Length: 227
Image (cartoon, rainbow, N blue to C red; front, side, top):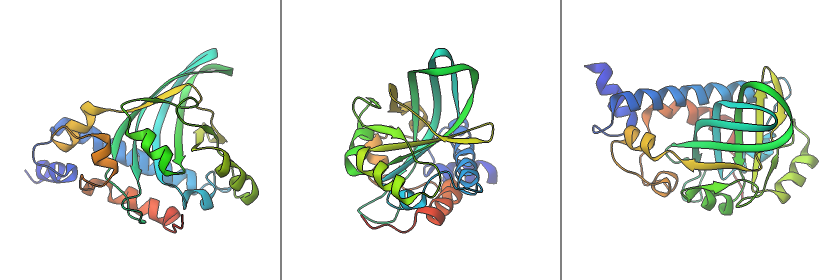
């Protein structure tokens, strides 16, 4: 009984779907591990001065990719945004990323993905039911490492920066042509009612207790915030 109670509390509501909460909680834990491992790399993947200025942060563990020159992508992850112009974080929304890209990629595999939304305009794109990266929002592969100049240049020319880890190799990831949208079904299962992306990311929905570890990691690297 205590287990079921903790699962319901983790979702922030007693009307939540048990299986949906379990999947949501597992995705949160996987996302926490991805953020921690990618930021603890010997030469940090995500430039910390960018993460500290992020408006939103999205994490997609195990983004599936396949293709021969024309690549396909599919994955689910979570995203959170700053709330009320403060260093606090919103509840987590489950998102789906899908789409293709043109490039010299061969074979199949999985890639862990972190993307950093750099401004309010980028956040407002997230509120849409669906938007295409590279068309509705400018994006680029984020600068790898601590290079301040590169990070500053990137920040001025894109709304979204993306980073990837595949088989231990870190790199900036091109997402042009990929679509991003909230997973309404998963969010409803997790929170026990129909909630919009805007409600979640604007702070109307209470943050889930199960995400405390993820918030700790975010604050560890992104707590300083000075827009």
